[in-house]
Length: 468
Image 1: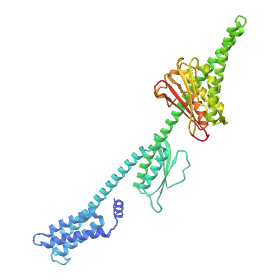
Image 2 (image 1 turned 45 degrees about the horizontal axis):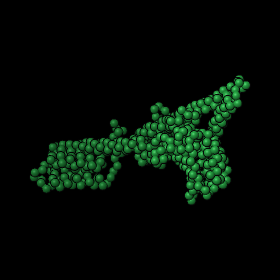
Image 3 (image 1 turned 90 degrees about the vertical axis):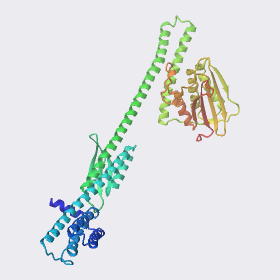
Image 4 (image 1 turned 90 degrees about the horizontal axis):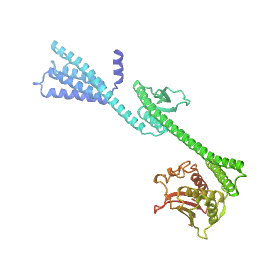
């Protein structure tokens, strides 16, 4: 009890201005008593002086209240108790009055000062709670771990004099006066150290405040750790899906042509003499087509691997666009039959510096797609035009067009439109096509025709390999 009183008195600082206010309160009560001495008795004035002491204690602190109490007792004795203008006391009643005023003033000053302290503590706690609430709201809005850690360091510095540092779990933490583990859901997600400002010591309240901030920091960092893990899980799940798609495609697109070639060879080996020349040529042709399909599939896998590794070697040479289109059409014509092919490549188009084999392969993939997704009665149009920057090649058809939600996805690896699920393919062709064109500094885009009668693919090849 005595220690608490000493601590309370030590916490109250002596402020001369506040003591002056206490003096003015005493003068005010004394002056009021002097104006009407016949109506106001010393007992009345004692109550007024007690009120002045309480006002001083509540508004100006303990020392101002004690000074007001001493001055009040002295003023009451000197100005209003006989003999006046003397500190002498003649009657026991006056002695009791001054004694009770002294005790009451001291008690009132202590109680009022204590009340003032509690009010100040309550206001401080309310302000701290509001600051913690705002801090928690700010942490909830952070997106990355770095943002959350920066917000914690800034908030600690704003509320407690000193320097806070946050470390991720597993980091080497240097020694510090205060080290706190940051935990979330029972897991260590980091560490916070705090170094008080030079020459200052942490109070109990400051330590509790830092611990509260550390708890909020742990929750925020835990949320970021969970978000990172969910993102990693999503990435792994997507990778598993892509691996499954690749394995399924490989299983289908390798098994079918190999089985066809094996069947053709087995049939020829067992019944070669019984087959006529036309049948033999048909069986050999079927085996040749399936072998070519198998070769194309293997080539696509190699192409996509080289694109992802950045190992595509572009060997540019001036190329005639008409010859490029003609070569791609010649390769794709068996896949396009019996569709009608319309070519509009005007003479005089500038030669474009490209790798002939890569761009021809890109055109082939687009023509191959047209053969898969359009009916046999469709017309496929290949046009070309030049502008100041390069040449644009457009391949359009009058088939069903692209599904509305697939326009931006057709160049994604392994993606196949629902209408293509019954046909052979891995969904790599257009991804390879985009990689080859972009390797030349060009662009490729897919869209539905404005008249609503099919799809159109536009390839832009710059006259300079660095221009887009």
